[in-house]
Image (cartoon, rainbow, N blue to C red; front, side):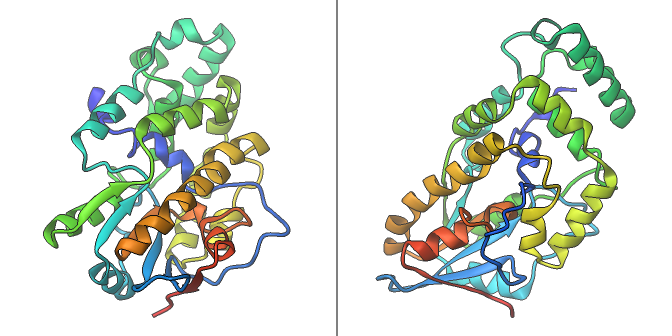
Length: 285
C-alpha cells in the first residue's frame, strides 16, 4: 500500500492540474502549451511549457516544437526538482500524517471519506489511516483516469535532461507545496473537493490538454477552487516563481515546465512575465 504514495509530486500535486475560478478579466491566450520568453535584456530565449502532472500513456504526446525548445535550452526548471533524492524523501513524508485520520477527522468526515474511497477505489479508509487527507485526495484523483498507470511529463523531462547533461532545478520545495496546501484547504473543503472528482471531468481536462487549450484548462470547473485556494495554489506561487525566473534567465536559457493551469489568468505565469517586461509568444509549430 505504501507504494501508492511514494511521491507526493505524482499523487498530491495532481490536484493542482489547473482548475480555478473563471476570471472574466483574464487576458485570453492562444492555444499553446509552449511559450517563448525573450527581450528585457535576455541574450537567449527561454521557454515555458505547461504540463499535466499525470496522463494515460495512450493520451501522452510530445510535439516536435517542444523537443526542439528543450534541446535549445541549457537548464530544466520544474516546480519541484523530483530528481533530487532529498525532495523525494520529503515527498514520501508529505503523504504520511502526523496523526491517524481516525483521530484527526470527525466521525462524519471519516465516514464521508470512507464512502468516497470505496466508491472510487474499493479501498476502505482504515487501510489508509496513516496517510494525509491530501494524499488520499491525490490517490482518488488518479482513479478518475481510464488507465492503470499514469505517465509523467516531469519524469520524461528529467530523463531527457540527464541524457543531454542539462542541470535540473526546482522553483520550490515539497515542504513549500505541503504548507501551501495546508493553507489552501480545510479538511472539510478537501473532502468536498474530492467528492466532486469524476471521470467525465478528467476526460474533458485531458481533451483540453491535448488540444493545448490553456484557457479551458484554467477556467475548467470554476467552482472547484475557492478564492482562498486559488490564492495559495495558483496566484502566490506564480508570483514567487516570477521573482526567481529573471535572474535565472539572464544566466542561461531555461526550459520551465510547470502545471498548465499556471499559464493563463491575470496572475498567471504568461501575463506576469509580460508585466515584468518580457516578450512572451506562443510557439505553435
